[in-house]
Length: 71
Image (cartoon, rainbow, N blue to C red; front, top):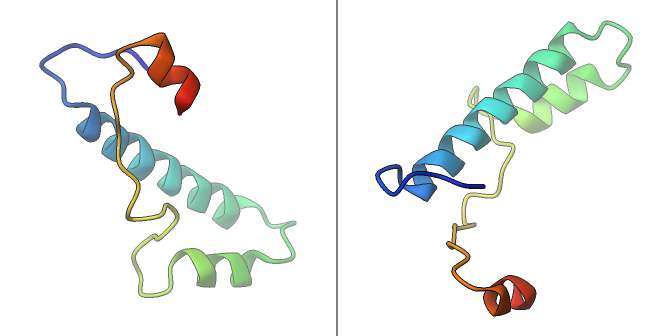
């Protein structure tokens, strides 16, 4: 993902995760044919908040091809 220097990569990842998690929940809620709907929503929204992504992953900027290959 390319970004401007001003935009922090961690902010972009945060917004991406928030958006995709919400869209996944909306898609599950809208799908009346999903037989596991209640179970999936229970897993994704245990306390009312969406918990889709792991909380501990972090972003690193790829500065070289060697770093890219190592990661």
